[in-house]
Image (tube, rainbow, N blue to C red; front, top):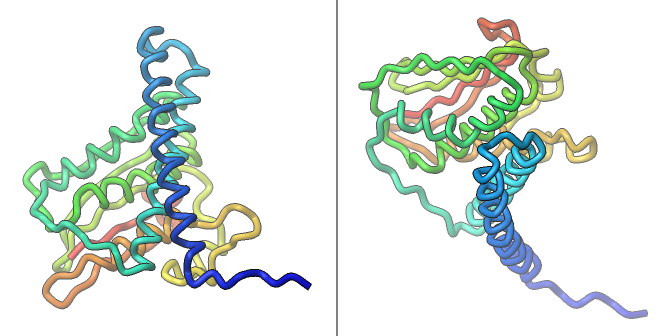
Amino acid sequence: MQTSPKSNGLFPTILASTVHDIKNSLGTLLELVRQAAARQDGQSAELNQLEFEAARINHSLMQLLVMYKVDSQKFSLDIEESAVTDIVNEAIHQQARLAGLHNIDLQVDCNADLLCYCDSPIISNALAAVLNNALRYTRNTVLISVAEEDGYVHIAIEDDGDGYPPHFLAADLNDTAELDWVSGNTGLGLYFVSVMAGLHKNAGKSGFVRIDNESCLGGARFKLFLP
């Protein structure tokens, strides 16, 4: 009987390399779609949807690459002082197409002078993943609000949808064993945000996330806390 060769940890490296190649090709495809949509003045619903789906896949691949680097201890944050409004606006920019496609009222409540210390591209991408989920499941409105509380800057994303399912609310978002890999509704995006938040540390505090169904809009509420 033929036996499989020992991987010696090679498979994760091959997988990461393959994901990187796919991400590069998808980036090229995404740019071509955007050029085609621009030639039609953004009036093609099919091209708009194709652009959104390609961008969503590209974003998921980015998350996989980052998580591979974290698991391999090859990842480090680039911490700098950033305006929170810039971080929020970048996340909104990434998801503006989806909001437009579904005519979602996207509201923002953020003090323009509020600053935080973080890896701003990572946090913007993480927030974009959560915002994507809110835009997909809300009915009409999504609210992004920012405030300071107990030595943390917290960014909340709320919607008026049906809220998070019970297994999300009961799960430990830092434990992959509690994610539902069977149904396809894994919560991987929330896990990614939770891991990225936890890597941010300052003055003995670590970042974290909370989720509940206590939105002022009546649906799901996500809160990211950065020290």
